[in-house]
Image 1 (cartoon, one colour):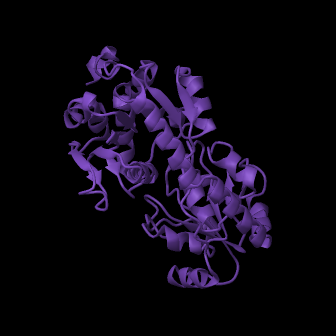
Image 2: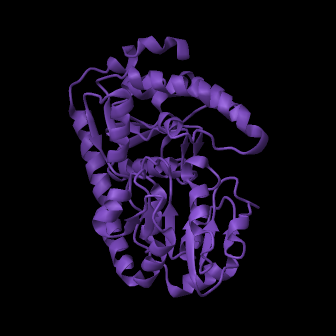
Length: 382
């Protein structure tokens, strides 16, 4: 029985990458692989079905957690030669992996002036920590193990990575799989709007980026100022209790929510206005519910939304309100397009591709030694 080790510190429905990592574990289990997972948090549904290699993460300090990540992952991993395939999602240990899945943010966020996520008194602390992490992340990506295969989550990510670091010898683009098609019904919509205290009539535009600068909430608020026929529904980190005076009377913020099913059901469109987004998994989640997406050029999912007609491009300058109204007026057309998008990015197609790649790597006769001896130049970061 071939043996996979997957590495991501929060493997489960905790965030977009955690959901993808969890789906990849499920794919390997379904294909008859033995699976070990290096993780600090592991979803309960996987516990008992995989070998959980428990990862220690220091309780405080993003910079401390990041800089010590390699040491603690190596400690949890043990002997890497016992695995047929190692699939990692964290750059600190990319050189130990057969496959590293790239969804980097820090350098790109810095370049677009959106490095910080927190608000208030925490911002100076976060700035200091990310200024430490930024060169460390650069170092890992510039000292690449050429035996490791890089998997980019979008063409956008590949292009940005090449601009900053050059391309590795072995790389491919593998889009994130979409959730299964599960369209919102009118009953779902009425119930969601009632529970979220939204008007039953009229247009609701959703946004799940919270108050992260990189997600572009500020330009959405500016674009919808005075557009009183469109209610802006905000969710995400730091947005609980947030008030946008510019949108008084047509704005609702619910904060961080785990009930994304209800959130999408309430919406006529989802806005992904990021200044940089490696893929934008929320776009696929919305499309799977039949909700079209308005996205910027810096969202990795945009070309695929446009290809299938499941979304529209917003350049941050033209009328966002007009786009949302047009989507609302053609809701059934967009609903069919969302289904095409969902089916094209199906989990089944993704899993077949991934398992074929695992089998190719497992059957190869390559030496295990690059996992251990490469990237000796990063010793100062361990």
